[in-house]
Length: 119
Length: 114
Image 1 (cartoon, rainbow over the protein chains, first blue to last red):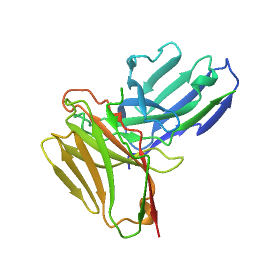
Image 2: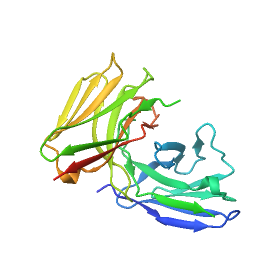
Image 3: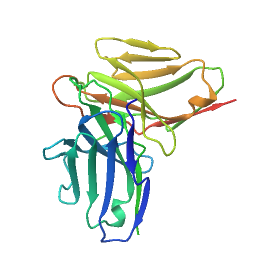
Image 4: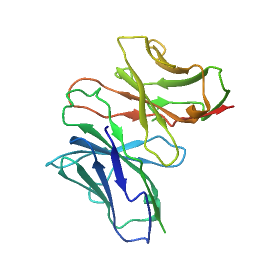
């Protein structure tokens, strides 16, 4: 159980275009989803926390207008990288916490990640 | 500022021997620590965790040790198996409330040789 999927698994786009990445919890409902970014040989950096039906909370230094997050249902969150540039090329990973979660120590379940390359 | 540090980018161990992965943290407010394992092209999977009220937690071949005074934790895998070859991430968080933020280290690539 507790499977999280991401689509697409990889995407190549031209500079200036927008790219949407989907994160789905397949066998559980997720009140909260998280979006991380990982540059090569670096740690996973939390970008934003997304709660179903409300606005996402962005970490310091993450541009909310550039990285649009929508958490429209309890099983789906989307990250849209708007007007992508080569410096946005990275590995984007989402994670989710189940509906029954009551503690920050509850396990986050991670998706397989999306490799974005902006030419 | 890297609040969670994994200073060894890689570790190579012989099958059957012990693997010891280390992690240091700087934020004394962290009180919950986790280890995640990641295979290529997959997301991290939860391995084991420890609360700051403990100094050891064991789950099968995996044991995590926490030294709060040194702000250091380690993951021991014994005996190591080739299937354990992966990147291991140490993560820390503040328990309580609704703060689920995890702060990750850069990871250590473990290679277990047959």
